Image (cartoon, rainbow, N blue to C red; front, top):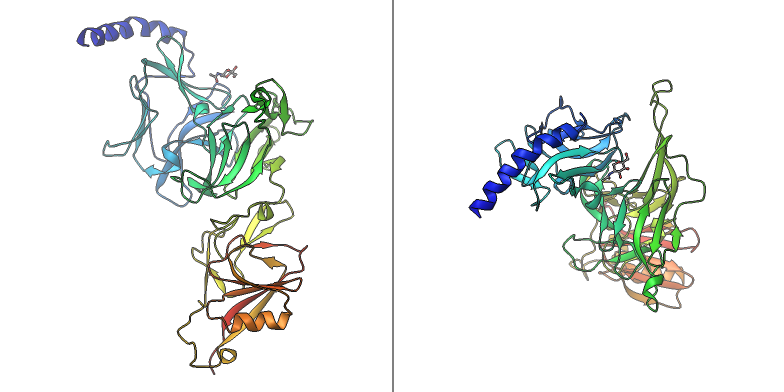
Length: 438
Ligand SMILES: *[C@@H]1O[C@H](CO)[C@@H](O)[C@H](O)[C@H]1NC(C)=O
């Protein structure tokens, strides 16, 4: 061992200078480091399109080690280290020959590393594709961010079987959220929800590419490809493609492209003109080229889990087909900063007052039309008229909400899940509330 270690050191000593000569000024030599603070100069790609560095998290004294678009004003982040968890000011990222990329807190404690590396690292490159690469002394690629995507993939990036994208928690919180894009072993690309990242199984599937062919493995998908022209497709082993992108893709030389699993669960292919100094960046926005699913409020229907929004919350679709969540009357957000989270009822049904007073004197209903919370029923009454439905919930101390539709009444218990606006059903919800005592 001692011999091989000495040999390796000698080897590095001899070879390394040659590699330095081969490098351009855009490679990042061993021993380079970045320190988390506002003044940081990131490691740039040759074109200057992408940067690797620390970004301050909005409104916090915390920094995220990440890859972002360096030339656009909002510096959209496309990859992040440390599971998306930000680190304190003064944390240091450095390049080590054996551990690769290391992230340490100001006290020197290791927070994250790109992992053990078999061969010695010679240098790193922030590639113009947005891929951060650790290059070995033999010029091989030892580690690359493209192989460990977070919530986004970029042109020339491939999502292989068993790889995944995970949504972030919210717009400015990058830790893992509830939505996953997975390339499954059977050849299907799926969007699924998972309430706990450690769960072996997921809660619900809300998109499926149907590219699995159990009778013919060759006819099954195995890669999600974002090609160098900006097209996204599922490649089958027989080389057939299922295109996800529409036929006319905005030019890749004039536009940035990214495919992101947004924090609201929608998989979205965005593009945006690269800014030029003449036009400036002011009016430029990310535009949606395509997205999946079309209506996430309706697409997510799960026995376990809360649905597209949090518990008791109601999912609405805006004019751009994006979901937003609004607590129903009589309910409030648990975390006022997390509009997509769960809502708490101001009134919780209780059986304690049973028999003391007439329920008519205690409770009333807020009536909401075109809102449904499928599943989470505990009783169904059919046939039934509206007044009977109301009365049934009123007199049932477990009932928090009754749903009335086409002569049926469903009594529901809290928390409610899968809340959505649905104007096609002609549905009425009776939300039980407490009468204000006179
Ligand atoms: C680096 O970027 C160039 C284009 O700028 C591309 O051809 C090459 O494949 C990239 N290398 C890796 C390892 O991603």
